[in-house]
Amino acid sequence: MTDPDRTHDVVVWGATGVAGRFTAEYLTERYAPEDLSVAVGGRSPEKLDALVDDLTRRSDAWDDVPVVVGDATDPESLRAIARDARVVCTTVGPYTRYGSPLVEACVETGTDYCDLTGEVNWTREMVDRFHEGAADAEARIVHSCGFDSVPSDIGTLLVESFAAETFGAPCETVRIYLDGGSGSVSGGTLASFGELFEAAATDPVARETLRNPYSLAPNGERSGVDPGAQRWPRTDPLRGGWTAPSPMAPVNERVVRRSNALLGYPWGREFRCTEVVPTGEGVRGAAVAGLVAGGLGAFTAAMSVGPVRSALRRYAFPDPGEGPTREEAEAGHFRIGVRGRGTATDGPFTVEAEFGADRDPGYGATARMLGESAVCLARGDVDSPLDGGVLTPASGIGLPLAERLRAVGFTASVDGVADDKRS
Ligand SMILES: NC(=O)c1ccc[n+]([C@@H]2O[C@H](COP(=O)([O-])OP(=O)(O)OC[C@H]3O[C@@H](n4cnc5c(N)ncnc54)[C@H](OP(=O)(O)O)[C@@H]3O)[C@@H](O)[C@H]2O)c1
Image 1: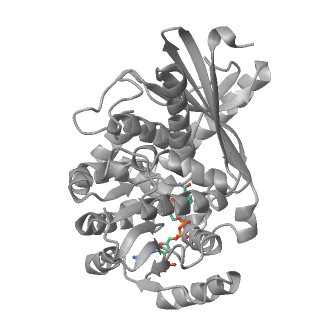
Image 2: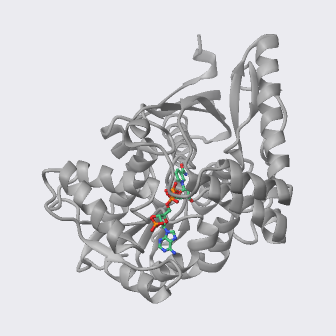
Image 3: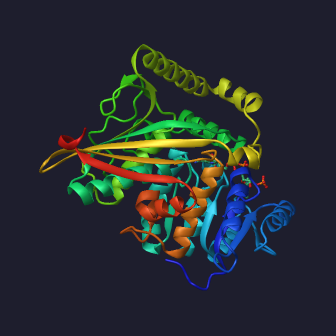
């Protein structure tokens, strides 16, 4: 992995943006410089200096925070930053537009890496271009370390690890439920969303990536029994009640399937994973599921039409750099349930995990998920058979991430019982 002589444990690249600033604030408030050497990076020295003033004002432990300057479009500057870091933790997005040269620099210099991408078309490109090289260089390139896709991916890992330990068998079916939440969205996230739809309109590989539920699996393994994301209201086969499609399912389900593949299919080749929004029982539950599915369908249809997409991006979406305030990011909450069903030699069993936090999922909570992912990588606090590659949170870091998040107030619990003992 990494050279112990590198100057910085973690470089927060994109620290002047919305998510990057929250991540830099979190790391410098949680860790003292002697425990974790953090640097902040970006393209504007003036903005970085102002950020450092702010960070040192907020935290007694930090008299100064080192700054690294470069540009996402200047590969030599990125190589210099990566060479001097144990981990580069990046929030410079849209990743489809700005992300690839940094991944390349980290692979070339054998540097661990984590990000916040939900742009599955881009993750697919990174898998195809860099997985082998990253594995050879022992560089862990861990995508989607925020609200996409830590709760779903680590939640599934919690369920499957409990099943293996307690029942000696995997859960062949896992369902992920967005049980509750409130939060906000930044201009950078909406710009990334726009970029994903742009790619789907113009790039056949991106279209295939969004069509194929196994598109993030290793090349040669991109098919299977799982039909992919739910598109219409349906009653839930494990919990009962009505469910609607989850807006994050196209990302999270693919990430979870990639985890299973990279770990060598410990959850089985017939593993099925579906993420949904539960909407309740009876007529009301069905009506709400219909409204959620209809709203999501209408938004997807609008974003798929070029002129409508351009108009929304230009006139309706906030600009990149705009987003929640610190107070807003520290408010909000989310709760994700993960339920798995398997069959052991003694009969069927059910395992259930809960993952959540009392902070805005995309910002206050994401800053902690990304920050702690970087800390796990910097300290080698990982539980994974893989030393390198283009990885997922579950396959690249594993359960130590859940443990670290519990220590900063997240819920990450799991329990299970044989079906004949359920009350
Ligand atoms: N998965 C999740 O839960 C989650 C949550 C939040 C965000 N995200 C993702 O994170 C990404 C960032 O979102 P955000 O709201 O923080 O965006 P943002 O506020 O627009 O920040 C983008 C950052 O990129 C920097 N940047 C832009 N062009 C650059 C270049 N050529 N070279 C170097 N730096 C450059 C900006 O620097 P300047 O300040 O100099 O402009 C800024 O620091 C997006 O892709 C978003 O989708 C994901």
